[in-house]
Image (cartoon, rainbow over all chains, first blue to last red):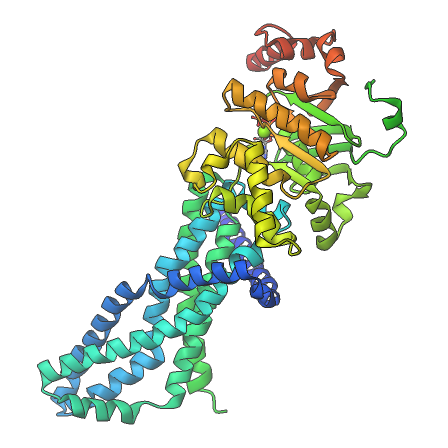
Length: 262
Length: 269
Ligand SMILES: Nc1ncnc2c1ncn2[C@@H]1O[C@H](COP(=O)(O)OP(=O)(O)OP(=O)(O)O)[C@@H](O)[C@H]1O
Ligand SMILES: [Mg+2]
């Protein structure tokens, strides 16, 4: 029992230490945004934009089209009983832009790009490359974290738009083939339902998730110790922590925008 | 006890470690290291594997901070410098990592160019390239300039890292086992590079090594780290002719002597 309490205590202190490190890293990196003008940082940024935004497209596409199809299939079952299958377009559009789009994108990016960040920086840490940068008076926050942070902050919203569109298309196909809703009708319903607020809250979420994934991935990487095992642990932690934060923050953003009267 | 020329004795040391103590957890690695590095001298630090040589020179660049004691570099306490001041001090120091620590996604050339890109905005691209080529030639690495660290051998990485360490023309250069893992021919080449760098850049250098050949060749002074302290220091001749039993055993590489007796005694308990 006492052991359990000390373990919980240790876990909490380790978690808050990690959170502190992550927040400090975020603050420090944000202060450095201006330094991107130097050309070799721009090269690094383009490389990260490519990794985050282009290499992830195939998996994002498959996941999003099936998410849309599942939403349509499930929603259609209930709606068809009420004779309202035409409303599938509304339901899918709202849930894709507001929730599922940013959410699915973020989970994919956390699992692929965020974990890679932790592994890459973790390996650099244990092979003394981070120390080498420090000794050359090259700040890792600027050289390594900044391009990753900016790339994620830009690419998560961009991919989210893509995810939502592809998901809605998938839903249109299913509602036409399974429930006989015409594409035109689907489109009318979809556009009817869509509000600006849905879109910008969705994009805001994506933006926040992108930052979370980059900061968690990089800070876990930079805090790595203990060889290959340490790198494995850092990678695993990066994914788990990102997932938790994405779910929790996702809830609160929706809460703030849709439940609180402004 | 050291045989540094009288003119140097009157000078302020560039680097001074005063009673540096460092422990990792319960393991006490340094138990009061005193060490001075003077202008234009090459100091070799020898010691057994795991004796804390790397930890000692990491204190000089501020990668480790002492638990007790002081590290003075250019006359200033490393622990009391701001980030900016520390970076400025680091720019005047070069450091060759035991593990080379080259960045894996950059070619050898780009690795060597990185410090210039970062800190010499005054240089044009062609001036930078020329400097890089010059340093790579010095360590006989021109042929591998376009390769990635993953594609070359450990010894080649070490030489590339050496080029990177000296590319900014530092005042103080720290080499962590520059010749380990190199074939004898290249090892002697590296010794020459170190000796020449000391002369041409007028750099003060610390070379950590277990390679006694190399130590005698490059060192103006040799210091031995043992059980967390500097137990002897002097010119290569003094070290060669010392009657300190631990130093004797170390430089002759004999399996019998106080070093191994100590180990046996420990094992018995
Ligand atoms: N960051 C660290 N955390 C924990 N222990 C460490 C750390 N760095 C060094 N040590 C320990 O300190 C001791 C001295 O290490 P150091 O790397 O300085 O040895 P060394 O003299 O350079 O040996 P070698 O010749 O093998 O390179 C070792 O026992 C090592 O395990
Ligand atoms: Mg070492």
